[in-house]
Length: 231
Ligand SMILES: [Zn+2]
Image 1 (cartoon, rainbow, N blue to C red):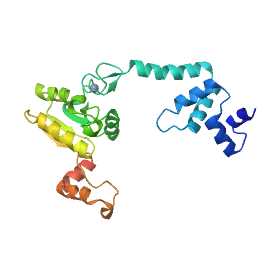
Image 2 (image 1 turned 120 degrees about the vertical axis):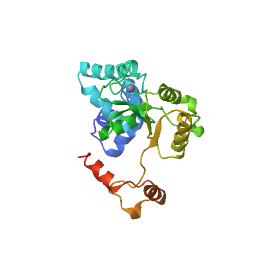
Image 3 (image 1 turned 120 degrees about the horizontal axis):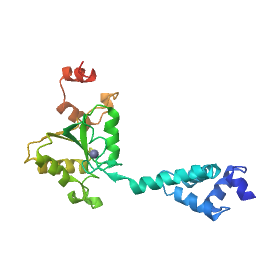
Image 4 (image 1 turned 90 degrees about the vertical axis):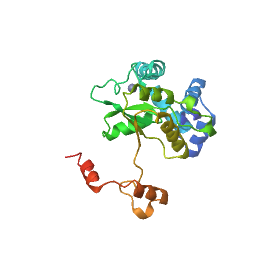
């Protein structure tokens, strides 16, 4: 009885915490909580709240919840062109006739594709590397999709490659490696402008960022035009 009331929050906070960590009234409940707690950012307390929420739902709703996750895991594939996650062999971006296939934005992960897409400023296509070169983590060029990128350059269909990787040492190493690989082909290689963020005070920008901002300065007229979408 005490355990049940602990689960439903009828006892003191201290007791609740103790029961949630060590005592469950059901082995099945405990296993479900343990599974949810394996997810990133989910502690046991949150896991228990989520499991109890599911327990209160209709069977068919929980079945739908479980099946959705299972289907996602079993049926999702990667686009054979850009290596982004997709439901079809070629993703909706690569198969969009309005996207510029000759401009390819190279990113580390699918989350970066989502970030650039959210800006609604880029009408080219992507190439997902699947990580960056990091000897410390045992990730070398062969573990990434660099060869597939080189093939795109070789075919001559790609005119510009925009390197949009992390501004870390690993990111710079990967940029340089790709630059060397693509150099023999007729491809313009560019990187994202790195500089002071919008809304930042200059006095708070670190010297590397500020230094790069000065070196990569752009024409004021261009900035004005871009911020007005060329109108
Ligand atoms: Zn694609």
